Every structure is written in structure tokens, then in C-alpha cells.
Length: 153
Image 1 (cartoon, helix red, strand yellow):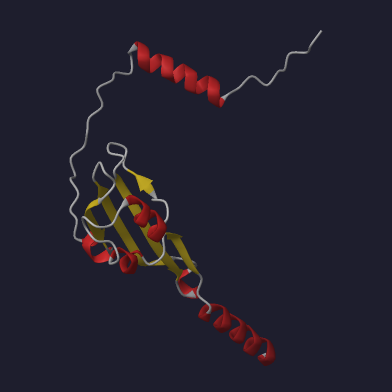
Image 2: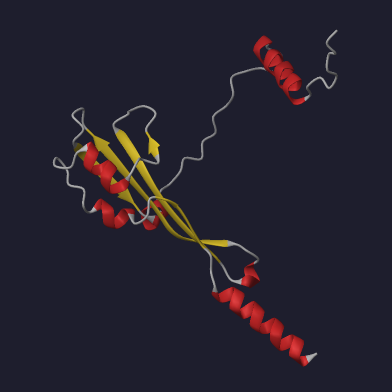
């Protein structure tokens, strides 16, 4: 019994020391962003250094957003909860010629200091309206398709 207990302790401690690190996005944005110079670096240099952007702004195609997120699994006692190590965001603004106009770097510390507005947007539709009834019936048809298939004659 004592041998099994020692083996179990060795297995759990060896598993707990090998932490799994998950990286999402572009690696080392903080270091690579220092190589970008305003009014000197162009679009091709940025693509070569950082690769394609994680997100291109919906409203302005000259605003590129690069993300870096690094998580590590916590100890075995926390049952797989993940701890956030890095959460970096680089926002690159290009002018119409493709030259770097502005860059903003946000790390985990800057993001924690942001305040969000708690106001709630009210919906302007009514449940008895034609559009609401139409969309509801479409949703029901999509969620419950006809199970009978027509046989070809």
C-alpha cells in the first residue's frame, strides 16, 4: 500500500510540474513593436515583421490589430483553471500611402485599468410586430427541420 502511495505522489507531482502553455496570436508583440517606427515603416515591413493582422478594423481598412494571448494551466489542485500570463494588443494605424501613422500598445496592466460603461441599451422591437413573428417562425423552422424525405418516383 505504501509503494502505491509513493508512486501516486510521484506521478501527480511530475504532472503538476509540466505546465501547458497555450499561445494565441503573434508571439512577442512587445519586442517586435519596438522595431516599428512612425513615418518610416511601411505596410510591407509590418507584414514581414508581424505577419498578417489578427483583425482588420471594420470601419477603416488601414487600422490593423495584432493580438498575443498566453495562458498557462494552474496547479492540479485548481482543476485545470488557466492563468493569463500575457494579453498584449498592438493597434497599428496606416495612412493612405501605407506608411505607419500611429501605433498603440496595450498590455495586461493597461487593460485592467479600463472602465466600462454599465448602461443598458433597450430594444426597440415589440413581440407582436410582424418582423418579430417572421424571424421567430424562421428560427423554429431552422431548428426543427422536416424529418421526412420525399421519395423520388
